[in-house]
Length: 594
Image 1 (tube, helix red, strand yellow):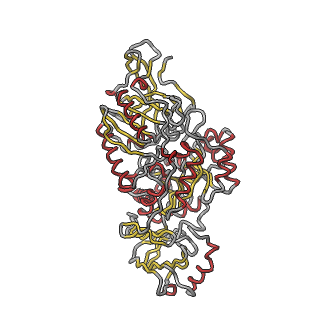
Image 2 (tube, rainbow, N blue to C red):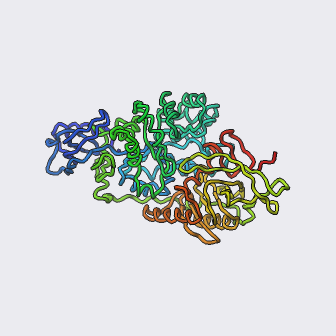
Image 3 (tube, rainbow, N blue to C red):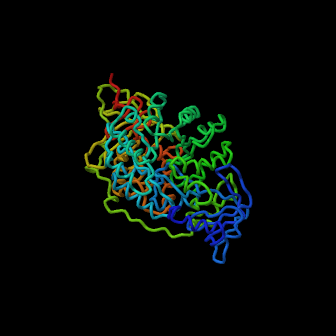
Protein backbone atom coordinates (compact mmCIF):
# COMPACT_ATOMS: atom_id res chain seq x y z
CA UNK A 1 0.00 0.00 0.00
CA UNK A 2 2.43 2.57 -1.24
CA UNK A 3 0.13 5.38 -2.42
CA UNK A 4 -2.93 6.78 -0.64
CA UNK A 5 -6.27 6.72 -2.40
CA UNK A 6 -6.45 10.51 -2.56
CA UNK A 7 -3.10 10.63 -4.32
CA UNK A 8 -4.24 8.49 -7.25
CA UNK A 9 -8.03 8.86 -7.28
CA UNK A 10 -8.13 10.91 -10.48
CA UNK A 11 -5.94 8.46 -12.33
CA UNK A 12 -8.12 5.57 -11.15
CA UNK A 13 -11.16 7.44 -12.39
CA UNK A 14 -9.64 8.05 -15.81
CA UNK A 15 -8.76 4.39 -16.22
CA UNK A 16 -12.24 3.34 -15.12
CA UNK A 17 -13.71 5.58 -17.82
CA UNK A 18 -11.20 4.41 -20.43
CA UNK A 19 -9.54 7.80 -20.83
CA UNK A 20 -6.25 6.28 -19.68
CA UNK A 21 -5.08 2.69 -19.84
CA UNK A 22 -4.40 0.30 -17.01
CA UNK A 23 -0.93 -0.92 -16.13
CA UNK A 24 -2.17 -4.43 -15.44
CA UNK A 25 -5.41 -6.22 -16.31
CA UNK A 26 -6.42 -9.67 -15.09
CA UNK A 27 -9.01 -11.21 -17.42
CA UNK A 28 -11.47 -14.12 -17.33
CA UNK A 29 -11.45 -14.69 -13.58
CA UNK A 30 -14.08 -15.83 -11.10
CA UNK A 31 -14.33 -12.99 -8.61
CA UNK A 32 -14.74 -13.91 -4.95
CA UNK A 33 -16.90 -11.00 -3.86
CA UNK A 34 -16.42 -10.68 -0.11
CA UNK A 35 -19.09 -7.98 0.12
CA UNK A 36 -21.98 -10.06 -1.19
CA UNK A 37 -20.65 -13.59 -0.80
CA UNK A 38 -21.05 -14.20 -4.53
CA UNK A 39 -18.83 -15.93 -7.05
CA UNK A 40 -18.96 -13.82 -10.23
CA UNK A 41 -17.71 -15.43 -13.44
CA UNK A 42 -15.89 -13.89 -16.41
CA UNK A 43 -14.65 -10.87 -14.47
CA UNK A 44 -11.71 -8.65 -15.40
CA UNK A 45 -9.82 -6.46 -12.96
CA UNK A 46 -7.95 -3.35 -14.14
CA UNK A 47 -5.11 -1.99 -12.04
CA UNK A 48 -3.11 1.22 -12.02
CA UNK A 49 -0.78 2.76 -9.43
CA UNK A 50 -1.15 -0.32 -7.25
CA UNK A 51 -4.92 -0.04 -6.91
CA UNK A 52 -7.99 -1.46 -8.59
CA UNK A 53 -9.52 0.95 -11.09
CA UNK A 54 -12.24 -1.19 -12.64
CA UNK A 55 -14.00 -4.54 -12.11
CA UNK A 56 -16.06 -6.07 -14.90
CA UNK A 57 -15.40 -6.25 -18.65
CA UNK A 58 -12.20 -4.27 -19.00
CA UNK A 59 -11.50 -4.09 -22.75
CA UNK A 60 -11.67 -0.30 -22.64
CA UNK A 61 -8.82 -0.17 -20.10
CA UNK A 62 -6.33 -2.24 -22.11
CA UNK A 63 -3.70 -0.41 -24.14
CA UNK A 64 -0.59 -1.46 -26.02
CA UNK A 65 1.54 -1.15 -22.87
CA UNK A 66 -0.90 -2.90 -20.55
CA UNK A 67 0.27 -6.16 -19.03
CA UNK A 68 -2.53 -8.72 -19.38
CA UNK A 69 -2.82 -11.87 -17.28
CA UNK A 70 -5.41 -14.38 -18.46
CA UNK A 71 -6.80 -15.99 -15.31
CA UNK A 72 -8.39 -18.77 -17.40
CA UNK A 73 -11.26 -19.29 -15.01
CA UNK A 74 -9.20 -19.18 -11.84
CA UNK A 75 -10.65 -17.59 -8.73
CA UNK A 76 -9.68 -14.00 -7.98
CA UNK A 77 -9.29 -13.85 -4.19
CA UNK A 78 -8.26 -10.84 -2.09
CA UNK A 79 -4.81 -11.24 -0.58
CA UNK A 80 -4.99 -12.95 2.80
CA UNK A 81 -4.50 -10.83 5.92
CA UNK A 82 -3.16 -12.37 9.12
CA UNK A 83 -4.62 -10.25 11.88
CA UNK A 84 -2.41 -11.60 14.65
CA UNK A 85 0.96 -13.30 14.42
CA UNK A 86 4.41 -13.28 15.95
CA UNK A 87 7.01 -13.30 13.20
CA UNK A 88 9.61 -14.38 15.73
CA UNK A 89 7.77 -17.70 16.13
CA UNK A 90 8.57 -18.57 12.52
CA UNK A 91 12.25 -18.46 13.57
CA UNK A 92 12.81 -16.27 10.50
CA UNK A 93 13.62 -12.63 10.03
CA UNK A 94 10.75 -10.47 8.79
CA UNK A 95 12.28 -10.52 5.31
CA UNK A 96 12.60 -14.30 5.13
CA UNK A 97 9.09 -14.75 6.50
CA UNK A 98 7.74 -12.33 3.89
CA UNK A 99 9.09 -14.53 1.11
CA UNK A 100 7.35 -17.59 2.54
CA UNK A 101 4.12 -15.79 3.41
CA UNK A 102 3.70 -14.10 0.05
CA UNK A 103 4.23 -17.40 -1.77
CA UNK A 104 1.25 -18.75 0.18
CA UNK A 105 -0.99 -15.77 -0.55
CA UNK A 106 -0.53 -13.66 2.58
CA UNK A 107 -0.19 -10.06 1.45
CA UNK A 108 -0.64 -8.29 4.81
CA UNK A 109 0.16 -9.13 8.41
CA UNK A 110 -0.48 -7.47 11.75
CA UNK A 111 2.56 -8.57 13.71
CA UNK A 112 2.95 -8.32 17.44
CA UNK A 113 6.73 -8.26 18.04
CA UNK A 114 6.46 -8.68 21.77
CA UNK A 115 9.07 -11.44 21.72
CA UNK A 116 11.87 -9.11 20.67
CA UNK A 117 10.36 -6.37 22.84
CA UNK A 118 10.95 -8.54 25.90
CA UNK A 119 14.61 -8.73 24.98
CA UNK A 120 15.37 -5.28 23.55
CA UNK A 121 12.32 -3.11 24.26
CA UNK A 122 11.39 -0.27 21.92
CA UNK A 123 14.63 -0.68 19.99
CA UNK A 124 13.76 -4.26 19.07
CA UNK A 125 10.23 -3.31 18.05
CA UNK A 126 11.49 -0.49 15.87
CA UNK A 127 14.03 -2.69 14.13
CA UNK A 128 11.48 -5.34 13.18
CA UNK A 129 8.96 -2.67 12.21
CA UNK A 130 11.49 -0.89 9.99
CA UNK A 131 12.50 -4.16 8.36
CA UNK A 132 8.86 -4.75 7.50
CA UNK A 133 8.36 -1.35 5.90
CA UNK A 134 10.74 -2.06 3.03
CA UNK A 135 9.04 -5.26 1.86
CA UNK A 136 6.32 -6.07 -0.70
CA UNK A 137 4.46 -7.75 2.16
CA UNK A 138 2.44 -5.16 4.07
CA UNK A 139 3.68 -5.29 7.64
CA UNK A 140 1.55 -3.53 10.23
CA UNK A 141 2.62 -3.57 13.85
CA UNK A 142 0.53 -3.87 16.98
CA UNK A 143 2.73 -2.33 19.63
CA UNK A 144 3.53 -4.84 22.39
CA UNK A 145 1.45 -4.21 25.50
CA UNK A 146 2.82 -6.53 28.17
CA UNK A 147 6.57 -6.25 28.43
CA UNK A 148 7.12 -8.16 30.58
CA UNK A 149 3.94 -10.24 30.35
CA UNK A 150 3.62 -9.83 34.11
CA UNK A 151 5.55 -7.55 36.43
CA UNK A 152 5.46 -9.81 39.48
CA UNK A 153 6.65 -13.21 38.31
CA UNK A 154 9.53 -12.89 35.84
CA UNK A 155 12.45 -10.78 34.64
CA UNK A 156 12.95 -9.96 30.98
CA UNK A 157 15.45 -7.90 29.08
CA UNK A 158 13.35 -4.74 28.86
CA UNK A 159 10.14 -3.01 29.87
CA UNK A 160 7.71 -0.80 28.01
CA UNK A 161 5.89 2.14 29.57
CA UNK A 162 2.70 4.03 28.81
CA UNK A 163 4.85 6.75 27.25
CA UNK A 164 6.48 4.18 24.96
CA UNK A 165 3.05 3.05 23.77
CA UNK A 166 1.88 6.65 23.31
CA UNK A 167 4.91 7.41 21.16
CA UNK A 168 4.61 4.14 19.23
CA UNK A 169 1.04 4.91 18.23
CA UNK A 170 2.42 7.74 16.12
CA UNK A 171 4.62 5.51 13.98
CA UNK A 172 3.36 5.01 10.47
CA UNK A 173 1.70 1.60 10.05
CA UNK A 174 1.41 0.91 13.76
CA UNK A 175 -2.17 -0.33 13.83
CA UNK A 176 -2.88 -0.68 17.52
CA UNK A 177 -1.95 -2.32 20.79
CA UNK A 178 -0.65 -5.89 20.83
CA UNK A 179 -2.52 -8.61 22.71
CA UNK A 180 -3.17 -7.39 26.25
CA UNK A 181 -2.23 -10.58 28.10
CA UNK A 182 -2.29 -9.22 31.62
CA UNK A 183 -6.05 -9.49 31.87
CA UNK A 184 -6.12 -9.35 35.70
CA UNK A 185 -4.17 -6.10 35.47
CA UNK A 186 -6.73 -4.73 33.04
CA UNK A 187 -9.72 -5.84 35.09
CA UNK A 188 -8.37 -4.57 38.40
CA UNK A 189 -7.16 -1.26 37.07
CA UNK A 190 -3.39 -1.61 36.85
CA UNK A 191 -2.19 1.89 35.81
CA UNK A 192 0.20 0.53 33.17
CA UNK A 193 -2.46 -1.58 31.46
CA UNK A 194 -5.23 1.02 31.64
CA UNK A 195 -2.83 3.74 30.54
CA UNK A 196 -1.70 1.80 27.48
CA UNK A 197 -5.28 1.07 26.46
CA UNK A 198 -6.27 4.71 26.93
CA UNK A 199 -3.42 5.98 24.75
CA UNK A 200 -4.31 3.49 22.01
CA UNK A 201 -7.96 4.51 21.99
CA UNK A 202 -7.00 8.19 22.01
CA UNK A 203 -4.98 7.49 18.85
CA UNK A 204 -8.11 5.89 17.34
CA UNK A 205 -6.35 2.55 17.00
CA UNK A 206 -7.27 -1.01 17.86
CA UNK A 207 -6.76 -2.72 21.23
CA UNK A 208 -6.23 -6.42 20.61
CA UNK A 209 -7.03 -8.77 23.45
CA UNK A 210 -6.05 -12.04 25.09
CA UNK A 211 -8.51 -13.61 27.52
CA UNK A 212 -8.06 -17.33 28.29
CA UNK A 213 -9.95 -17.38 31.62
CA UNK A 214 -13.44 -18.79 32.31
CA UNK A 215 -14.82 -16.04 34.55
CA UNK A 216 -17.77 -14.30 32.84
CA UNK A 217 -17.65 -11.26 35.11
CA UNK A 218 -13.95 -10.77 34.41
CA UNK A 219 -14.60 -11.21 30.68
CA UNK A 220 -17.19 -8.42 30.61
CA UNK A 221 -14.96 -6.19 32.70
CA UNK A 222 -12.13 -6.89 30.27
CA UNK A 223 -14.24 -6.05 27.21
CA UNK A 224 -15.48 -2.88 28.89
CA UNK A 225 -11.86 -1.81 29.28
CA UNK A 226 -11.55 -1.42 25.50
CA UNK A 227 -9.83 -4.71 24.61
CA UNK A 228 -12.29 -6.08 22.10
CA UNK A 229 -10.82 -9.22 20.54
CA UNK A 230 -9.46 -12.56 21.71
CA UNK A 231 -7.49 -15.31 20.00
CA UNK A 232 -7.24 -17.57 23.07
CA UNK A 233 -10.68 -19.15 22.70
CA UNK A 234 -10.59 -22.95 22.62
CA UNK A 235 -14.27 -23.99 22.92
CA UNK A 236 -17.45 -23.28 21.00
CA UNK A 237 -19.20 -22.15 24.18
CA UNK A 238 -16.63 -19.51 25.03
CA UNK A 239 -16.55 -18.36 21.42
CA UNK A 240 -20.30 -17.90 21.41
CA UNK A 241 -20.19 -16.01 24.71
CA UNK A 242 -17.58 -13.60 23.40
CA UNK A 243 -19.46 -13.01 20.13
CA UNK A 244 -22.69 -12.28 22.00
CA UNK A 245 -20.85 -9.64 24.03
CA UNK A 246 -19.60 -7.88 20.90
CA UNK A 247 -16.05 -9.19 21.05
CA UNK A 248 -14.23 -9.89 17.81
CA UNK A 249 -13.65 -13.64 17.85
CA UNK A 250 -10.22 -14.53 16.51
CA UNK A 251 -9.84 -18.24 15.74
CA UNK A 252 -6.30 -19.53 15.78
CA UNK A 253 -4.65 -22.35 13.88
CA UNK A 254 -0.91 -22.36 14.37
CA UNK A 255 1.66 -25.11 14.33
CA UNK A 256 0.96 -26.27 17.88
CA UNK A 257 -2.24 -24.45 18.93
CA UNK A 258 -5.01 -25.74 16.68
CA UNK A 259 -8.36 -24.26 17.66
CA UNK A 260 -10.32 -24.19 14.39
CA UNK A 261 -11.86 -27.64 14.82
CA UNK A 262 -13.69 -26.72 18.03
CA UNK A 263 -14.21 -22.98 17.86
CA UNK A 264 -15.49 -22.86 14.26
CA UNK A 265 -18.55 -24.74 15.54
CA UNK A 266 -19.99 -21.32 16.36
CA UNK A 267 -20.49 -21.12 12.60
CA UNK A 268 -21.14 -24.73 11.57
CA UNK A 269 -23.41 -25.62 14.50
CA UNK A 270 -24.70 -22.33 15.92
CA UNK A 271 -24.91 -20.57 12.53
CA UNK A 272 -23.94 -17.17 13.91
CA UNK A 273 -23.25 -14.22 11.66
CA UNK A 274 -19.58 -14.26 10.74
CA UNK A 275 -18.69 -10.63 10.12
CA UNK A 276 -17.13 -10.37 13.59
CA UNK A 277 -14.95 -13.48 13.24
CA UNK A 278 -11.46 -13.69 11.78
CA UNK A 279 -8.82 -16.39 11.33
CA UNK A 280 -5.17 -16.06 12.38
CA UNK A 281 -2.01 -18.12 12.76
CA UNK A 282 -0.55 -16.61 15.97
CA UNK A 283 2.50 -18.91 15.98
CA UNK A 284 3.76 -21.02 13.08
CA UNK A 285 7.12 -22.65 12.57
CA UNK A 286 8.99 -22.98 9.27
CA UNK A 287 7.96 -26.53 8.39
CA UNK A 288 4.29 -25.55 8.60
CA UNK A 289 4.89 -22.70 6.17
CA UNK A 290 6.43 -25.09 3.66
CA UNK A 291 4.18 -28.12 4.12
CA UNK A 292 0.79 -26.57 4.87
CA UNK A 293 0.98 -22.87 4.15
CA UNK A 294 0.30 -19.73 6.12
CA UNK A 295 -3.12 -18.08 6.47
CA UNK A 296 -4.35 -20.00 3.44
CA UNK A 297 -3.94 -23.13 5.59
CA UNK A 298 -6.10 -21.64 8.36
CA UNK A 299 -8.83 -20.65 5.90
CA UNK A 300 -8.62 -24.10 4.33
CA UNK A 301 -9.05 -25.69 7.77
CA UNK A 302 -12.27 -23.72 8.29
CA UNK A 303 -13.53 -24.98 4.92
CA UNK A 304 -12.60 -28.55 5.87
CA UNK A 305 -14.71 -28.19 9.01
CA UNK A 306 -17.75 -27.28 6.93
CA UNK A 307 -17.61 -23.50 6.43
CA UNK A 308 -18.63 -22.19 3.01
CA UNK A 309 -15.42 -21.27 1.13
CA UNK A 310 -16.41 -17.66 0.49
CA UNK A 311 -17.38 -17.21 4.14
CA UNK A 312 -14.04 -18.65 5.21
CA UNK A 313 -12.22 -16.32 2.82
CA UNK A 314 -14.10 -13.37 4.31
CA UNK A 315 -12.72 -14.36 7.72
CA UNK A 316 -9.19 -14.13 6.34
CA UNK A 317 -9.62 -10.90 4.38
CA UNK A 318 -12.37 -8.28 4.74
CA UNK A 319 -13.25 -9.14 8.35
CA UNK A 320 -9.65 -8.52 9.43
CA UNK A 321 -9.46 -5.26 7.50
CA UNK A 322 -12.70 -4.04 9.08
CA UNK A 323 -11.52 -4.93 12.58
CA UNK A 324 -8.46 -2.73 12.10
CA UNK A 325 -10.49 0.01 10.34
CA UNK A 326 -8.50 -0.53 7.13
CA UNK A 327 -11.21 -1.85 4.83
CA UNK A 328 -11.09 1.35 2.80
CA UNK A 329 -7.84 -0.03 1.41
CA UNK A 330 -7.57 -3.72 2.21
CA UNK A 331 -9.48 -6.98 2.21
CA UNK A 332 -11.45 -6.88 -1.05
CA UNK A 333 -11.22 -6.56 -4.82
CA UNK A 334 -13.17 -3.44 -5.75
CA UNK A 335 -12.59 0.00 -7.30
CA UNK A 336 -10.17 2.07 -5.25
CA UNK A 337 -8.90 -0.82 -3.16
CA UNK A 338 -5.24 -1.82 -3.00
CA UNK A 339 -4.57 -4.44 -5.68
CA UNK A 340 -3.64 -7.41 -3.50
CA UNK A 341 -5.02 -10.29 -5.55
CA UNK A 342 -4.49 -14.05 -5.64
CA UNK A 343 -5.15 -16.31 -8.62
CA UNK A 344 -6.31 -19.65 -7.26
CA UNK A 345 -7.41 -22.70 -9.20
CA UNK A 346 -9.16 -24.60 -6.40
CA UNK A 347 -11.17 -22.51 -3.95
CA UNK A 348 -11.00 -25.29 -1.37
CA UNK A 349 -7.27 -25.91 -1.52
CA UNK A 350 -6.35 -22.22 -1.75
CA UNK A 351 -2.90 -22.62 -3.26
CA UNK A 352 -2.16 -19.46 -5.28
CA UNK A 353 -0.53 -19.78 -8.68
CA UNK A 354 -0.05 -16.01 -8.86
CA UNK A 355 0.26 -13.47 -6.06
CA UNK A 356 -0.15 -9.77 -6.82
CA UNK A 357 0.69 -7.17 -4.17
CA UNK A 358 0.24 -3.46 -4.76
CA UNK A 359 -0.57 -4.26 -8.38
CA UNK A 360 2.76 -6.02 -8.95
CA UNK A 361 3.24 -9.72 -9.64
CA UNK A 362 5.30 -10.97 -6.69
CA UNK A 363 4.92 -14.73 -7.07
CA UNK A 364 4.18 -16.79 -10.16
CA UNK A 365 4.93 -20.28 -11.46
CA UNK A 366 6.30 -21.45 -8.10
CA UNK A 367 8.85 -18.70 -7.75
CA UNK A 368 9.24 -15.21 -6.37
CA UNK A 369 9.43 -12.60 -9.10
CA UNK A 370 11.01 -9.80 -7.07
CA UNK A 371 14.28 -9.21 -5.27
CA UNK A 372 13.95 -8.53 -1.56
CA UNK A 373 16.15 -5.94 0.18
CA UNK A 374 18.66 -6.95 2.86
CA UNK A 375 18.20 -5.77 6.42
CA UNK A 376 21.15 -5.95 8.84
CA UNK A 377 20.59 -6.00 12.60
CA UNK A 378 23.17 -4.22 14.82
CA UNK A 379 25.83 -6.42 16.39
CA UNK A 380 24.56 -6.04 19.96
CA UNK A 381 21.17 -7.44 18.88
CA UNK A 382 23.07 -10.54 17.78
CA UNK A 383 24.82 -10.98 21.14
CA UNK A 384 22.03 -11.21 23.67
CA UNK A 385 22.86 -14.28 25.77
CA UNK A 386 24.35 -12.84 28.94
CA UNK A 387 25.00 -15.56 31.52
CA UNK A 388 26.88 -14.77 34.72
CA UNK A 389 29.12 -17.78 34.22
CA UNK A 390 29.28 -21.15 32.52
CA UNK A 391 26.79 -23.59 34.01
CA UNK A 392 27.66 -26.84 35.75
CA UNK A 393 25.68 -29.96 36.63
CA UNK A 394 25.33 -28.81 40.23
CA UNK A 395 23.33 -25.79 39.03
CA UNK A 396 20.55 -28.18 38.06
CA UNK A 397 20.26 -30.09 41.34
CA UNK A 398 17.18 -29.19 43.41
CA UNK A 399 17.81 -29.54 47.11
CA UNK A 400 15.01 -31.04 49.21
CA UNK A 401 13.76 -29.27 52.31
CA UNK A 402 12.82 -32.56 53.91
CA UNK A 403 14.95 -35.31 55.39
CA UNK A 404 12.83 -38.06 53.87
CA UNK A 405 13.74 -40.48 51.11
CA UNK A 406 10.71 -39.27 49.14
CA UNK A 407 9.00 -35.90 48.80
CA UNK A 408 5.91 -34.47 47.12
CA UNK A 409 6.30 -31.86 44.36
CA UNK A 410 4.25 -29.68 42.03
CA UNK A 411 4.78 -30.54 38.37
CA UNK A 412 3.96 -28.73 35.11
CA UNK A 413 1.95 -31.12 32.93
CA UNK A 414 1.96 -30.06 29.28
CA UNK A 415 -0.91 -30.78 26.89
CA UNK A 416 -0.10 -31.70 23.31
CA UNK A 417 -1.20 -29.09 20.75
CA UNK A 418 -2.36 -26.73 23.48
CA UNK A 419 -0.95 -23.51 24.89
CA UNK A 420 -2.32 -24.48 28.31
CA UNK A 421 -0.79 -26.61 31.04
CA UNK A 422 -2.12 -28.44 34.09
CA UNK A 423 -0.78 -28.51 37.62
CA UNK A 424 -0.15 -32.00 38.89
CA UNK A 425 1.53 -33.38 41.98
CA UNK A 426 3.68 -36.46 42.40
CA UNK A 427 6.11 -38.08 44.81
CA UNK A 428 9.81 -38.12 43.86
CA UNK A 429 12.79 -39.81 45.42
CA UNK A 430 15.42 -37.83 47.31
CA UNK A 431 19.04 -38.91 46.91
CA UNK A 432 21.93 -37.28 48.81
CA UNK A 433 19.56 -34.44 49.69
CA UNK A 434 18.52 -33.66 46.09
CA UNK A 435 15.16 -34.35 44.46
CA UNK A 436 15.50 -36.83 41.58
CA UNK A 437 13.55 -36.81 38.29
CA UNK A 438 11.52 -39.95 37.53
CA UNK A 439 11.94 -41.04 33.91
CA UNK A 440 9.76 -44.10 34.37
CA UNK A 441 6.80 -41.84 35.14
CA UNK A 442 7.86 -39.06 32.72
CA UNK A 443 8.95 -36.53 35.34
CA UNK A 444 11.82 -34.47 33.89
CA UNK A 445 14.08 -31.87 35.46
CA UNK A 446 13.30 -28.31 34.35
CA UNK A 447 15.23 -25.06 34.70
CA UNK A 448 14.77 -21.41 33.76
CA UNK A 449 17.92 -19.26 33.78
CA UNK A 450 17.95 -15.46 33.64
CA UNK A 451 19.90 -14.57 30.48
CA UNK A 452 19.56 -10.80 30.07
CA UNK A 453 21.38 -9.14 32.99
CA UNK A 454 23.96 -11.71 34.15
CA UNK A 455 22.26 -12.14 37.53
CA UNK A 456 23.03 -15.85 37.72
CA UNK A 457 19.45 -16.50 38.81
CA UNK A 458 18.23 -20.05 38.19
CA UNK A 459 14.90 -21.61 39.11
CA UNK A 460 14.33 -25.37 39.06
CA UNK A 461 11.23 -27.49 38.68
CA UNK A 462 9.75 -30.54 36.98
CA UNK A 463 7.75 -31.20 33.82
CA UNK A 464 5.52 -34.05 32.65
CA UNK A 465 4.29 -34.88 29.16
CA UNK A 466 7.44 -34.77 27.03
CA UNK A 467 8.48 -38.42 27.68
CA UNK A 468 12.23 -37.91 27.19
CA UNK A 469 14.22 -41.05 27.95
CA UNK A 470 17.71 -39.57 27.61
CA UNK A 471 19.60 -36.34 27.00
CA UNK A 472 18.44 -32.74 27.34
CA UNK A 473 16.99 -29.83 25.38
CA UNK A 474 17.37 -26.06 25.72
CA UNK A 475 15.86 -22.94 24.18
CA UNK A 476 16.21 -19.16 24.40
CA UNK A 477 12.77 -18.96 22.82
CA UNK A 478 10.88 -19.06 26.12
CA UNK A 479 7.77 -16.92 25.99
CA UNK A 480 7.60 -14.16 26.85
CA UNK A 481 10.68 -13.01 28.74
CA UNK A 482 12.84 -15.40 26.71
CA UNK A 483 15.18 -16.51 29.40
CA UNK A 484 17.18 -19.69 28.92
CA UNK A 485 14.95 -22.72 29.33
CA UNK A 486 16.49 -26.17 29.87
CA UNK A 487 14.91 -29.59 30.39
CA UNK A 488 16.47 -33.01 30.63
CA UNK A 489 16.96 -36.42 32.09
CA UNK A 490 20.28 -35.64 33.75
CA UNK A 491 22.08 -32.57 35.06
CA UNK A 492 25.23 -33.09 33.00
CA UNK A 493 23.44 -32.91 29.66
CA UNK A 494 21.36 -29.96 30.88
CA UNK A 495 24.51 -27.97 31.65
CA UNK A 496 26.07 -28.96 28.33
CA UNK A 497 22.96 -27.92 26.37
CA UNK A 498 22.74 -24.54 28.10
CA UNK A 499 26.40 -23.71 27.59
CA UNK A 500 26.44 -24.75 23.94
CA UNK A 501 23.33 -22.67 23.22
CA UNK A 502 24.95 -19.64 24.81
CA UNK A 503 27.99 -20.07 22.56
CA UNK A 504 25.95 -19.77 19.35
CA UNK A 505 23.95 -16.72 20.46
CA UNK A 506 20.76 -18.53 21.36
CA UNK A 507 18.19 -20.66 19.61
CA UNK A 508 17.21 -24.27 20.25
CA UNK A 509 19.35 -27.34 20.86
CA UNK A 510 19.04 -31.07 21.56
CA UNK A 511 21.91 -32.99 23.16
CA UNK A 512 22.61 -36.50 24.44
CA UNK A 513 25.56 -37.80 26.42
CA UNK A 514 27.60 -34.67 25.76
CA UNK A 515 26.91 -34.64 22.01
CA UNK A 516 24.90 -32.13 19.97
CA UNK A 517 22.20 -33.98 18.03
CA UNK A 518 20.65 -30.88 16.43
CA UNK A 519 20.51 -27.13 16.84
CA UNK A 520 18.89 -24.07 15.30
CA UNK A 521 21.05 -21.00 15.69
CA UNK A 522 18.99 -17.84 16.29
CA UNK A 523 21.42 -14.97 16.80
CA UNK A 524 18.87 -12.20 16.24
CA UNK A 525 17.92 -11.51 19.88
CA UNK A 526 18.15 -15.25 20.55
CA UNK A 527 14.80 -15.51 18.75
CA UNK A 528 15.32 -15.49 14.98
CA UNK A 529 17.69 -17.07 12.52
CA UNK A 530 19.66 -14.99 10.03
CA UNK A 531 19.51 -17.82 7.49
CA UNK A 532 17.15 -18.37 4.55
CA UNK A 533 13.92 -20.31 4.93
CA UNK A 534 15.30 -23.46 3.31
CA UNK A 535 18.19 -23.66 5.78
CA UNK A 536 15.98 -23.06 8.80
CA UNK A 537 13.47 -25.68 7.63
CA UNK A 538 16.26 -28.25 7.37
CA UNK A 539 17.59 -27.35 10.83
CA UNK A 540 14.12 -27.54 12.37
CA UNK A 541 13.51 -30.93 10.75
CA UNK A 542 16.72 -32.17 12.33
CA UNK A 543 15.68 -30.63 15.65
CA UNK A 544 12.29 -32.36 15.59
CA UNK A 545 13.94 -35.68 14.71
CA UNK A 546 16.38 -35.23 17.59
CA UNK A 547 13.50 -34.69 20.05
CA UNK A 548 12.08 -38.00 18.84
CA UNK A 549 15.48 -39.65 19.28
CA UNK A 550 15.33 -38.63 22.93
CA UNK A 551 11.92 -40.31 23.14
CA UNK A 552 9.49 -37.40 22.71
CA UNK A 553 6.43 -38.46 20.65
CA UNK A 554 4.37 -35.26 20.75
CA UNK A 555 3.71 -32.85 17.88
CA UNK A 556 5.90 -29.70 17.67
CA UNK A 557 7.46 -30.33 21.09
CA UNK A 558 9.83 -27.35 20.89
CA UNK A 559 6.86 -24.98 20.57
CA UNK A 560 5.08 -26.53 23.54
CA UNK A 561 8.37 -26.33 25.43
CA UNK A 562 8.83 -22.65 24.54
CA UNK A 563 5.55 -21.75 26.26
CA UNK A 564 6.25 -23.57 29.51
CA UNK A 565 7.66 -20.30 30.89
CA UNK A 566 4.69 -18.05 30.03
CA UNK A 567 3.03 -17.02 33.32
CA UNK A 568 -0.16 -15.58 31.82
CA UNK A 569 -1.82 -18.74 30.51
CA UNK A 570 -3.22 -21.25 33.05
CA UNK A 571 -2.52 -23.39 34.95
CA UNK A 572 1.14 -23.39 36.03
CA UNK A 573 4.48 -22.20 34.56
CA UNK A 574 8.13 -21.79 35.43
CA UNK A 575 9.91 -18.44 35.28
CA UNK A 576 13.41 -17.37 36.27
CA UNK A 577 11.95 -16.57 39.69
CA UNK A 578 10.30 -19.93 40.28
CA UNK A 579 7.00 -21.76 39.81
CA UNK A 580 3.92 -19.65 39.04
CA UNK A 581 0.31 -20.69 39.66
CA UNK A 582 -1.45 -18.69 36.95
CA UNK A 583 -4.95 -19.52 38.16
CA UNK A 584 -4.19 -18.15 41.62
CA UNK A 585 -1.76 -15.59 40.18
CA UNK A 586 0.90 -16.30 42.79
CA UNK A 587 4.31 -17.96 43.21
CA UNK A 588 4.25 -21.47 44.63
CA UNK A 589 6.92 -23.81 45.91
CA UNK A 590 8.06 -26.75 43.83
CA UNK A 591 8.31 -28.94 46.89
CA UNK A 592 5.14 -29.41 48.94
CA UNK A 593 6.20 -29.51 52.56
CA UNK A 594 2.94 -29.04 54.51
